[in-house]
Image (cartoon, rainbow, N blue to C red):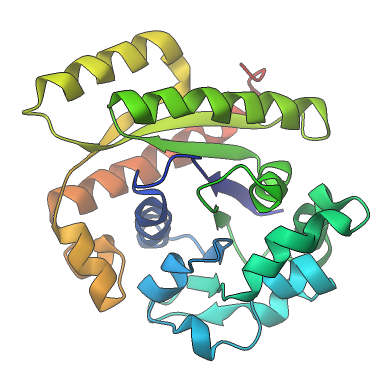
Length: 263
């Protein structure tokens, strides 16, 4: 089966969707086939890939609410090897009514197992809403690895407590092998507070913090406007190189992560 990554944080504004797009682009550049799934009703990922949520007929909500076929919802993007299942306003209904379905927390996982052929995608990236609701838990029960983007600042670091509690809940209720890694994002290396928080995070979380750091870069906003990952918009910029390094780090550690006892 494809390797499934969920990107989530209860705290908004931590480059969650930017990471989903940019990591997806970097993995494609490394020769992988990647599927992005937009689970957020705000549909930022969908918009950033050049699609208009208001014009979309058929979104990931069809799977969560109506047991639709995942494969039929996959759309090609401008980048060969990078596909997307978009989001639209129906995701608000999914968040509201999903819990009424039997075994609702496993609907996405079951759909991926049933409808996603192994040979199609090397990676599936789940971009989650900025809340620990039913949709985000669906992603966590489906994922093998959770990436938690976090700014090196107090409020963002404080929100990690809720995310780690969610990981423990998911492990105890049906996905015991779920691993997590924290990704430091939007770091300003000139900022002493950022540097100090980064050091504290590394000291506290050790192997569960990724070595790659994503720094602040205005070019990331530009890439979203043109509908391309930074890796394909300006491939030699600092942020593009950092996301390429992140893709390499994850690719090298996927097998190691899979054999580790969850910590």
